[in-house]
Length: 126
Image (cartoon, rainbow, N blue to C red; front, side, top):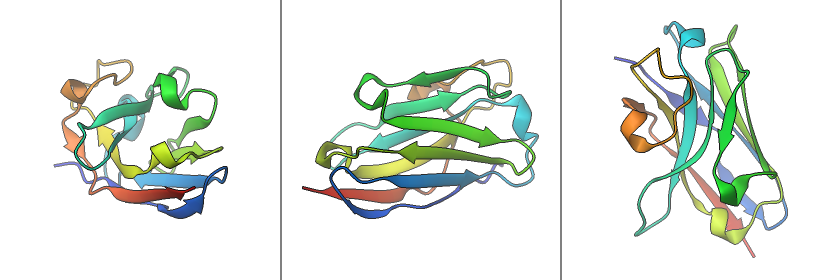
């Protein structure tokens, strides 16, 4: 079983920034893609961003492209999501996610995900 522990959520005004972090202790971290998803009340969980195991490849959902940046530190087994120019519509619970398939270059959908973090709330006020 892989444990994913998120931190860094909170309340911020529109236009502000937050940085989320996810730790995955005890895993062969660098061989797996990692991703962030989000889920707003009454909506389906949606893809936000993903990064390949070596950090070379990234993928972003259209609504966050240019504002969010995903990065990872394989020495520390962490993956971060830097969120800038936040908008009220970014308000959601954000989840760290990981696949069990080490052959997957970059996570793209919920179907790719085996392990989920507990989620961290991000609230953007207008």
